[in-house]
Image (cartoon, rainbow, N blue to C red; front, side, top):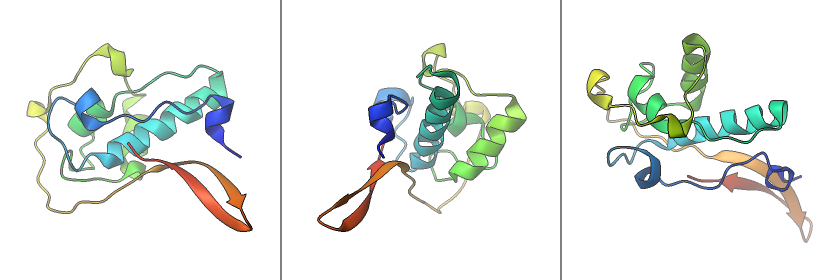
Length: 126
């Protein structure tokens, strides 16, 4: 099973492509946005990109560029009533101060397979 072949996974992004600042602890936002993109594509058959920057700037349950959890981002999106499309523009982080030294790393699992009897996951690491 590989969700990329079903056209419900956007391409790999780098934080320099879509966020307004150097943001080494933003993997949680990329993983969350990617999961939401794929879920939306499965449900609607429309593959669009969502704004990692909005999550970084506005999810007060996470710490922006200093780390966070995709599960908190999902909760924020539900409470917010949705998430902006990536092409709706960059959100500015000045209204959302963050403080944390706890970094995490998150990826999106987009499939699984076996090779020579060994199972493996296919990961999207933005």
